[in-house]
Length: 372
Ligand code: UD1
Ligand code: UDP
Image (cartoon, rainbow, N blue to C red; front, side, top):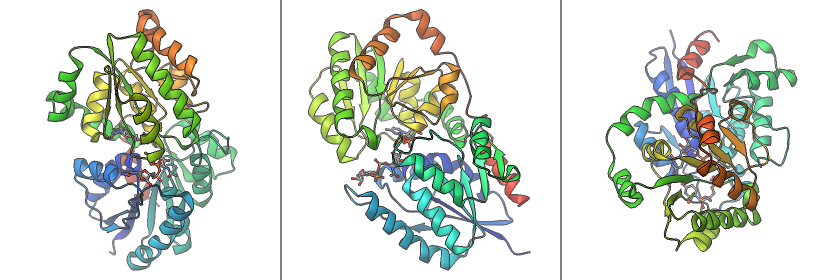
């Protein structure tokens, strides 16, 4: 019997983390010829993840350019995918979530005639501009998709409201939990060199972990976020803030300008996934605009302040682990300080929850594909 051909496509750090469990699950299946195509929309931040999960790409479009625009990236992905699809002729193409790589690779896969499989399908804010451009990337990908792997019942409901056929939607959980479970035990058992270096700098202080990169926050939003962090550091000299800074120049510039020389703030290069998980585990509180971090934190019992006005991940808000604070300086400061000092509220928010999955999502996807 001829093997079914899978092409798993991703391009950025979070896609790689969340697709790694699926790559591993399919690589064990003898009846499938599974190949990995990276657009390398990210470069260093993607390669860190590939190293950790021991994944090598069969096709590497190597597209990242410093300060790339959405226009040039979109054009490069659609052109780059053509030769890969024409050479390999996959039966199934897997894309993840909401990046430019996901939506444009889905379009290319549709042109090729392959079945489009969307992992992390059905998340919605229904606000075209928030998150930008991710909300539209998800909606576009959804229109092109044949098999929708929704992480939660809520995501399935969103797809049903758009008249997606019910027999094409599968609630699998989010593979982010598979990746986290695969890694968390090993990384907390023994400290890496990087983790030791951070631990020494912390000198036993409580840790506030920060990340941020959203396009709609670039400019004024980041200025307000940095002002809030400056104030929090000043008002609370007993705590330490660690911020691994995303490589996007629109993030690097304001963060370095406002936060570089503050003694209880440590700015770092993006961390390898395993070191970042350790840091989440070590933290008291997380302030972020990241989608993936919002999903990981409830499984680690860490309260999260999300610097966004909307979220396509309401489950953790409902579970009580996540609060939306937008990019309002005063609100970020007051919510952070309340959680630092109000132990009753803090303890309530740090209860463990797993609204996004049970660590078996990738295997469920494999079993579903075997029947389609
Ligand atoms: C992208 C995704 C976003 C996702 C985020 C995860 C789009 C439009 N955006 O945003 O949905 O949440 O990744 O982090 O798909 N850079 C490097 N090295 C890297 C990565 C990025 O130098 O390894 C710099 C480059 O200057 C690059 C810039 O960051 O041009 C922007 O990268 P890009 O992928 O276009 O956007 P992100 O803001 O990373
Ligand atoms: N992450 C990482 N190193 C870091 C910061 C984050 O490996 O320095 C991981 C984090 O654990 C999560 C993912 O990267 O799985 C989130 O990526 P990002 O915030 O860039 O993108 P988003 O999830 O918002 O699309």
